[in-house]
Amino acid sequence: MTRDPKSTKPAKGADKHGHTAPRGSERLDNGFLETLVGYNARRAWSQISTVFSDRMAAYGLKQVDFSVLSLLAHNPGATSRQLCATLDILPPNLVNLIAALDSRGLIERRPHPRDGRAVGLYLTSAGEKLTREAEQAVQQAELDASAKLNSRERETLIRLLQRLYL
Amino acid sequence: MTRDPKSTKPAKGADKHGHTAPRGSERLDNGFLETLVGYNARRAWSQISTVFSDRMAAYGLKQVDFSVLSLLAHNPGATSRQLCATLDILPPNLVNLIAALDSRGLIERRPHPRDGRAVGLYLTSAGEKLTREAEQAVQQAELDASAKLNSRERETLIRLLQRLYL
DNA sequence: TATTGTTATACTCTATAACTATA
DNA sequence: TATAGTTATAGAGTATAACAATA
Image (tube, rainbow over all chains, first blue to last red; front, side, top):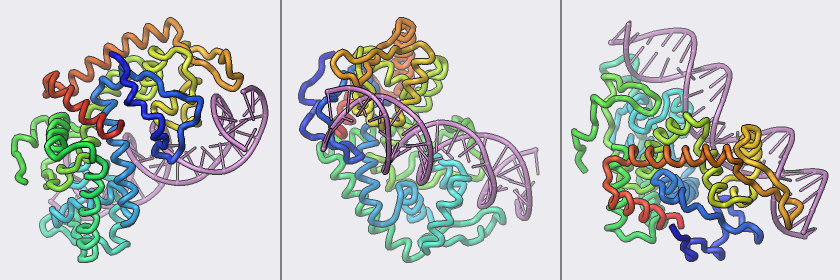
């Protein structure tokens, strides 16, 4: 496998930490790593993640916060346990997150009608408004982060990624 | 967007933590999230990452350990600073990692011929042997983790991912 | 003055064990 | 006996500031 000189882009020069590349450190040959789906998925996600986090900061949301709000917008009354299963996070790590969204008045906790152990989660009207705005910002962030792909390529990419985890 | 009943796979039932899905928690509608490249890239990477980590455990390597060894196999004499730039990690977080690989006798640190500040990193023969074996295991892990894709689809996926971050 | 490698440290994310109340 | 939610806590990953040696 040969290296493509164009792929090094020395002039671009700013990583996600805002650092600029120093003179003496040229990029290394990562020929093997870049043949791996896992390596490329991680790098691509890292890139998108930076754009995503920057845009969400305007709404005071982290990535998981947004995922929770978006799920509640489409699944009113969902429980913490369901959020955990869908997003693949562990229950103890959701507690403070839910409590914070509650304190901000974005969600409500109501007793579950059939199960006294469970708590149904609902967006408040403020939460609905914020979620609508954030979803639009996320869609724009997606387009910006994947600007080098046309819509057909973007759909192909998503379809292939889903076949890896679904 | 409708949910595909086949995609839930109730019998498969074990997430990356080894937990099995309890009865009461059906998956939620994540229609919006699954239209996002970022969300799908993260989920796909998480899936592959689990397979990857499991296989690397047999060699006593974490993902970043493998990346470092593979880079040194193809770039003998690379410096810590170059590894950091290529893998997008910060220098302080590489120090213990390099020291551990050195203690295990997998790499050597030699003074840089032209720059007294820098240290050139080289695989030992034991390091070369382990890296060769690990690279083969990684390739097999890749094939297993992306078994639902044929080689043409895998190449397409990698190409599209690279256009997001290169 | 700038860069390499390093120490110390803090902050976030993720994980496990154990408890309560309900089922 | 098992599940939902919670508490406390431990571990891993990631971040910044500051230092010595060298350029």
